[in-house]
Image (cartoon, rainbow, N blue to C red):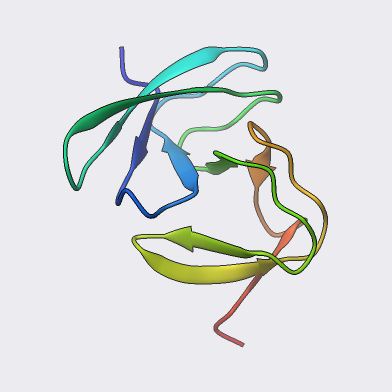
Length: 92
C-alpha cells in the first residue's frame, strides 16, 4: 500500500494519499524516478496534507515539486504535519 507521494527527489516533504494514523510506518514513492521510500509519521496526517521527511529548524526552507515553497516558522521534526502553523509561504 502507498501512503504518500513525493514529487521530486529534491523534496523534503511527502504528501499523504490516504489518512495516516500517528505512529504508522509508511510506504511511499518518488514520482520523478519511481523509487520507493519509507517514513514514519509521528502525528495524524490527513489525506492531501504534507509531512516532514527530515527535521527542520526555524528559518529552514521547505522544498516541494523541487521548488522552495516556504520558510519554517516553528521547529518541525521528521514525521510531523507541515502546514500553516509551522510554515510560511514564500509567495508573500
